[in-house]
Length: 232
Image 1: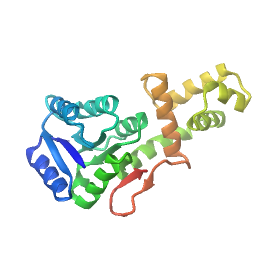
Image 2: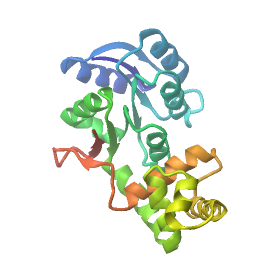
Image 3: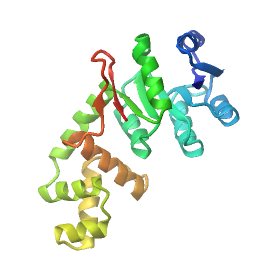
Image 4: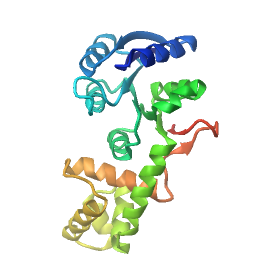
C-alpha cells in the first residue's frame, strides 16, 4: 500500500509516517499544504492520501477542499481526512458525494495506532470510515430534522433514498411530479441542505434518511474501542 501524508505539524506528520511505515505502508510523500498534496497525488497516484482538514495558508478548509478535488480528479485514490474538531456536516457532505474510498477521523483516534491502521486499510480498499463521534453528531442533527417531516414527506424521502426518480416517486405515491417537486423543496429546507445543486442535495437527503432511519449504511467496526464506523 502506498500513501501520501499532508499535515502542517511536523511532529504529527512524522508520527503518522512512522506508524504507517511500521505496519508495512509505503509513505511516498510527506507535505505540509494542500497545493503540495494535490501535486503529490497527481504525480504519485497513491492508494491513499491522508490529509488534515485545516492547512496553510489560512488554516480553514484547505484540506477539505483538496479532498473534494482529489475525489473528483483521482477517484481511484482513497482519501482519509483528519480533524481536531467534530464537523458532521462536512464529513457527511464529503461521504455523501461518493462514499467509496473515504474516511473522516478525529486526530485523537490516531493515538490508537491499530485502529488508525485498520481505517487506512479500509479506505485504501474502497471502504468508508467515519468517526463514531462525527456519526453520532450527524445522527442527532438529522434525526431532529427528520422528525419535522410530514408523513408524505417521509414517504417521498424514503423513495428518493431507494434511488427513485421524481417520475417514479409520483407513480408510486399516486401524486403529480409537481407535487413531488414541492415535497422535495420542503424536505431540503427542513434538512438544512444548501443550494449546492439538485443532484448533490438529493444524495445528501438520501444519506440523511439512511443515517437517521433504519437503513443505516454504516456498521460498527469489529473492535468496540476503535472509535469509528465503516462501510464495506
